[in-house]
Structures are given as structure tokens and as C-alpha cells.
Length: 176
Image 1 (cartoon, rainbow, N blue to C red):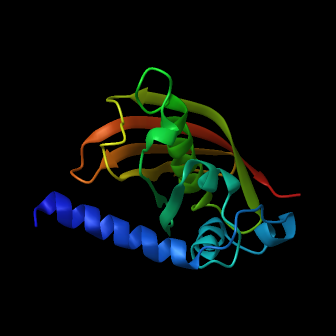
Image 2: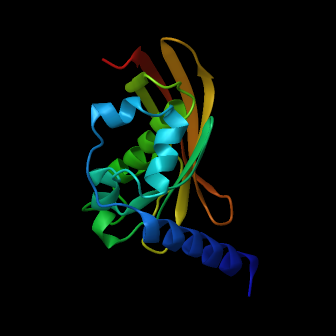
């Protein structure tokens, strides 16, 4: 088995293990959100204690890892993600990246804080197709303060080839 095949098998196994414990899609309540720090909230989703966001079901991607300052989402581009000109729609890239960026910022927030995206900058570097195989959006915090969070993310394939790069600026605020 080649390195590529081994990595694909590993990524698929990790995705299957995560999917096996995920809750149904939904939205956590404000009270639930307030109970956790940002990373604890994301880890509760990974444990199946809180619902997955409906967009993850719609576009068939999942949160795979969450630690302070870093998150990983995984999806496999398929025909359902295509635009009319024969490649994966830019919205798939942007949604995967926005999820990784926003959750990277969230993973650095203390209990009682929330965030929202103020700015999203995306560079699409190469096309995704249904032959690409699984990809991961890896989001990392650059800086999170009391009012602003900044993060970056890449979409990569199993060989580490970059398909897109993005940055975000998020507004950080106390939850009501």
C-alpha cells in the first residue's frame, strides 16, 4: 500500500470514528454555549453531546479535531458539490474554510465569549473534483484578544497539496 493509500485509509477511519459518535444536526442553545469554553464546546460536539451544525450535514463534512488554537475539518468533494462548469463550487471551499477559521478562533475563547466573522479572504489555488479524495481544512489561530480574533486555514489533500488558503477576522464578544 502506498503512502497516499495509507493516509486515505487513516483519514477515512478517523472520519468514520467521528461520525459514529456524532449527534443529529441542530443548533445548541445559548445556555449550552455559555456552559463551555470554546474548545470545550467543540469537543462536546465531537463527543456527540451537542448537535452538529446543519451545514456539516448539507455539505457532508465534519469536525475531526479540536484543540486550543487549532481545528481540523474533513470532507470529500463529490459530484453534489459541483458547479455547472464541472468542478467543485467555490462555496464548498469557502464554507469548509470559514468553518475551520471560525472554529479555530472559537477554540481559543474563554467560557462566556462568542464570535462572528467580520471578514473572510479566500484564495482558491487549484480545483477540487470528485477525484481529489478526502481533503482537510486546517484552521489555526494567529491572535485572539478580547475583541478581535484572527486565524488562517488551508485546504489540503492527503499528500499535503494545498488547494486553498484563507484568513479571517472575527469579532469577539461576551455572550448575552
